[in-house]
Image (cartoon, rainbow, N blue to C red; front, side, top):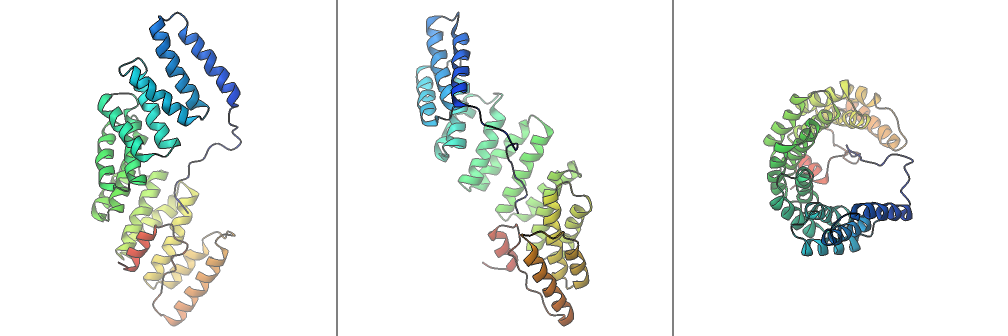
Length: 303
């Protein structure tokens, strides 16, 4: 049950490759008109690279962008060529090392570029997701957060920094970072996500009351259905850990039934009813949780 999902708009059709080629060719024709011969050759090579990228011929685009950068290292389109090349390596070909090298070269050459923020953020994500070097990701994202183009961009980057501290098990600093996001703008989805992450830290530390306080805020004023459902499941387990079975059962009954969760809801209700009658210690079933396996192990006290 991931917190964030990015999807293309439903019903959106991909453009016809033939039409894209015609459009690119016409654009290139008008671009070249009236240029000196040397400038035309430069623009033509860049235009071919862009066209190949636009229609999804990524190996060809890489070859053409590299050719352009070799012939025109300080050319009119060098900045955009290097930016596009890094994006192809990272987003399309998933070649992490080449993407990292290209992005770093871009930031070294064009630190004040209009694309510098995007490149820096993607560099941070690359270290997070591909290389799992969270300390390096934090170092990069800290710098990126100083030049965010909008406030929402700043919040997104600070959230990633907080998550990286969490991944490093630096919980105190993660708490500080998540609280910055909440204090900055308490009532939006990003703050709901931050509260859920705070609750996860408190659960790992077995600070159940602190976890409940965060989860209850999400339940009371959630800005996303997925955050709400996540918080509802989590708060049941927290009440159970405190042996407050009546509240655990009441919270469980507030969760709307869904086919994917029906069997779990029925089983958990039976377990809680049994625990209540026996007043025995509760063992958490982690199977429905959205926490990572690392977090689950930590919460269970596993090495």
